[in-house]
Amino acid sequence: MAVYLETDRLTLRHFTETDAELLIELDSDPDVMRYLSGGVPTPPAQIRKETIPRLLGQYEKWNNTYGTIAAHERTAGEFIGWFILRPAADGPFDEVELGYRFRKSAWGKGFATEGSTALLRKGFTELGVRMVWAETMFVNRGSRHVMEKLGMTHVKTYHPELPMIEGSEYGEVRYEITRAEWESSVLR
Image (cartoon, rainbow, N blue to C red; front, side, top):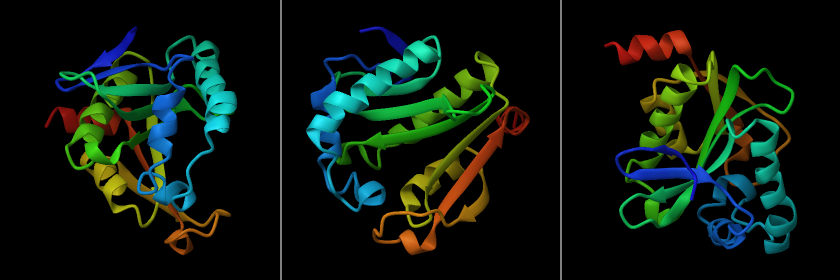
């Protein structure tokens, strides 16, 4: 397992072609998928034929620097979910998206904050990132709370065309943090 980053409790690594079952299990939990698809699981064939090749292609496209990264609880080695640190498809490399998705059993344990904090540090100190952004549904209070704990600022609420799922009428929110803002918060 090639390690991308480690924290006190997490090991983050690139996905491999043999990880489809981990993603199938993660995306089959209606609670995990609540704010993404209204609880509808991602079809296993889609994960095998589209998701895994897309994730592997991200590493190739961005020279193993950015992409979707598997998260394992460090002591037991258990897969708990993933993080994203990547530029938008047509965006500049110094503006990257931060995201995360976890098994329900990992919720509320600080893993999202811990891993995201380490990814912000890596992005701002090693990768030359100027700004990090994250988006979620307005009603996803858990994810918004993580963004706020990271020092990210709510910059807009917008209403894209979303599937009709519970809370979609309130729209999406975008949070951002710049390198200067992050450096200022780290030095406090």
